[in-house]
Length: 127
Image (cartoon, rainbow, N blue to C red; front, side, top):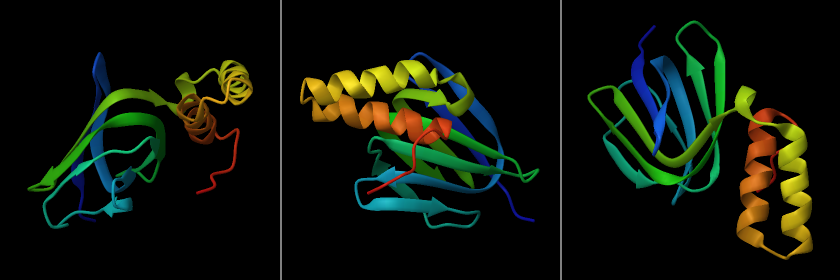
């Protein structure tokens, strides 16, 4: 099966690197799926979950907040301001952050908390 090489990098660290068969990310033009052989892409990342189907049929999910996505020559770079893998997310803390953001009517903070919970599997995605 064809593969693409993925680098998920946050401002402060390399989050994940490896081979994948498909990656789905939220861009300025909506959810975008990148598979091997896709036409070149350069787009702004929106706050949202990134789902990576690994070459060994595993699934990596990360909460990503801002940045860029670039694809060419079967190499996908996801350059995020902030990125957290699902298993790094403290669900209870994210739930408290969501409650606080809703109380303070901070839509951006609420969206960041929702994405963290979606990535961690603790909240169903809604668009």
